[in-house]
Length: 437
Image 1 (cartoon, rainbow, N blue to C red):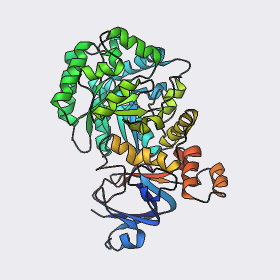
Image 2: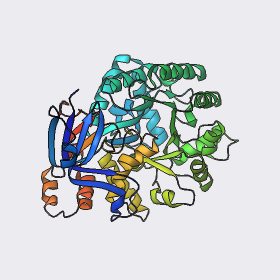
Image 3: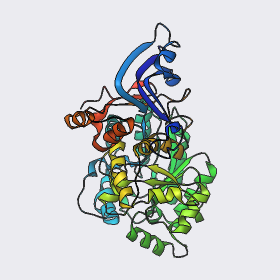
């Protein structure tokens, strides 16, 4: 296989940047090179040094003056909800009943699932996202469609069919046994196939009976290397309903704790209204709180206290995500723009290096895949996004006054969207240029 040598301004993180001047937290090359062979980065650094390692057959692609970063990672997204994004006027539980559940009944049709999976992965690539943690519908066929499309593109994605056996229409319900059996079959077929990873996915405590929660816990015990994803403390009405359904529980988190669903690969969407006990339980178990700012603002759910959760004596592991369709777009740039505002409303600020750390290495660490993606380190998978800070007239005008890398990143975060994404590489292959726009 012919190698590829990419040239551009490369930026990758080695740890959380404490401040905007914490230069040792990232690696930046004004004239950088990435040598890619068999879908992996085999050399990175200053372009003249990397070029010396290329042979005469290496294909060279010059992306200067654009920025090359690790592909973006979205830690919580509902692919069946593409056709209800931008639905008006409901809070969480009404939104689920009015829009989400009726829409997800369509995924009993395998052809519909295949179409939406294709369009969803097109859209993520257009926005620079190369890995997602995705919720499919309750239907086994929806997960099969997602994984088949993801595998065909050689993407590293984490996904699972949702398990839900109550408090929803008949068309989106399984049973404790069928949810278990379908999940086992999907794990056997897809987990570890190519770059595919499976997540055990009980939607949330409201839509799973105690019997199904027991089954979810059994799956986690039987497959301790798998991810588990669900929702937690998004909305006050949701929390109250959960306490009614599980009156023995100390709090919402205690329900998941009771059934053995906390752990280092457990992803809890939203986590806005956590008590100190709940935050401690998540921290002690290494569980991940997933920040979904556009969704939390759009549904009026509340403000995730990002900086306090990071700073507390028992800090939380945090990921960031779009949550589409409760969120308002597919872009991790837009997500961190709204995240900046949420954090500002809590009286704090997130500097642009921290934002880009979060949607690359930070999310890779939270998803326990940083050995494979989220950096530009030698030996990692070549999932890369190419960003153009002059992509629109407004951005070009603003760039005339930009003097630092931090300012450029903040411009990309604040004004950038899919138009700022010039190219995306998935396992070393261009993934965006063939998408019709």
